[in-house]
Length: 217
Ligand code: MN3
Image 1: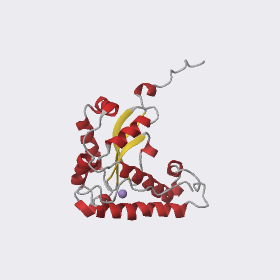
Image 2: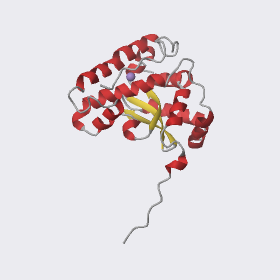
Image 3: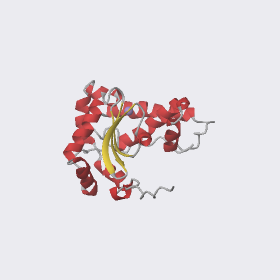
Image 4: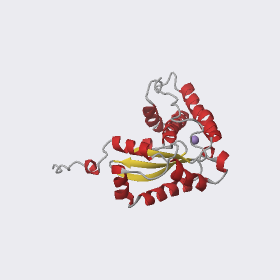
């Protein structure tokens, strides 16, 4: 089996006071771990058994009879990125080439943050907000439940979990407050920049479609 339960990239209390150790403990040790444990029980003896996680997600997304595997695999992947989308003393602003790309595609960093927060707050029910790069172009999007840009297209740079379990212990129903704190105090732009720099077809000029051949008669 190729799937694994990734260690947290920091101590459970490292995001205090913005994201409590209690929430990290429930969210990582219970919710995230349960998705992983369930996946590990579901895949033995199936074609998914020896696939890398990303392939399990893409394959199961295409098959309505594999919803349980898709949901649990998707949530393992989404949470792996979510924990890396935060860091102690995070927030602030992206820098360098990544920042230039944000300014090119959104007008300003502030506008990108505003649009990301808006997607996160308005996602109806459980889901995720994302900063994505697709063929060199940045955008923000949201997905429901276990879905992600792995399925909808592009490379996810930042994942913001808006399932209630992500914030309820700290902020009850106040999702906008959680989103605001995530953006201002937790977001890990270094990790997002690294993912941007290594994303396939990072540069917009590579995104040009190949010249079309003249139609034959
Ligand atoms: Mn979660």
